[in-house]
Length: 57
Image (tube, rainbow, N blue to C red):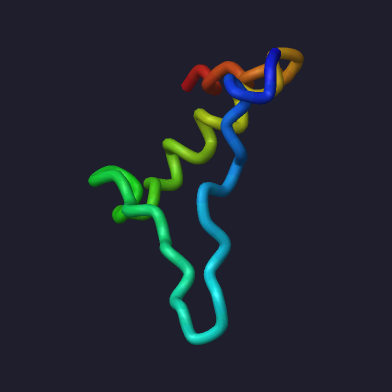
């Protein structure tokens, strides 16, 4: 990759007295995930995790 095609990670470093720009949040990032979503994410992240079968009554 040539130097002209390489884009720096940060376009601008803030100077003294200048605020650091913060990225805007997506609409779905403003709401905390529900517990079942967190569990599903964990199970998807580790394919070796076994989901227990529900107990038969």
